[in-house]
Every structure is written in C-alpha cells, then in structure tokens.
Length: 120
Image (cartoon, rainbow, N blue to C red):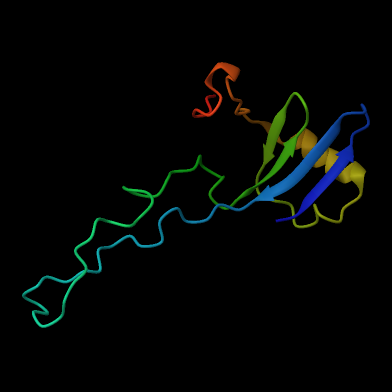
C-alpha cells in the first residue's frame, strides 16, 4: 500500500493511499467429508472457525479491483481504477486525480457511543 500527503492549489492538505480489497473468505466450499466416506479418520467436530459467515461482501461496481482514496479534514474521495503513476507523479497530476475522484461517505463515531460500533 502506497501513501502520499500533498497540498492542493487551494491549500487543502490531502492524504492519499491505495485500497486493494482482499477476499473476505478464502474458503468458499465445505472441505469436510462424510463419515461414510472416511470412517477410519477422526474428524474435527468443533464449532466453525471462520470469522465471517455467509458469502463474500459485495463491493460497489468498479471498486472490486481497488481504488485510490483521497482524504482531507472535511471530505473523502475515491478514484477507480487506481492510476499506475500515482505514487510518483507530480503533485499537479495528483491534484487532477483528486478532482476526478468521486465523493465518498466518511465514517465517524458518535461521542455518546464511545467503544461502540461506528455509524455512517
């Protein structure tokens, strides 16, 4: 994951990084076999150890291959696909990418719920 900080022509400081999603669940099929298929082998009978149940999370169309995130104090933006030169391009080009990026929702925490789940 790359990371850059730059100041645009209006003086706003932006933090920029690439986001490449991983598979939330690598194992999608049950690999255990029935007792009849392998009666001499002792099988693990503990509870399921997977962290997530169900299928893989669905990303918004176009985000499944990753995006470039731009975040300033009051706004957040996403650009997809990730430009190949973003880590080494001049600041002027990075600012162009930022202008092309689409606004994204920011996640914040309600001070009354500290220690609880974040909300949108």
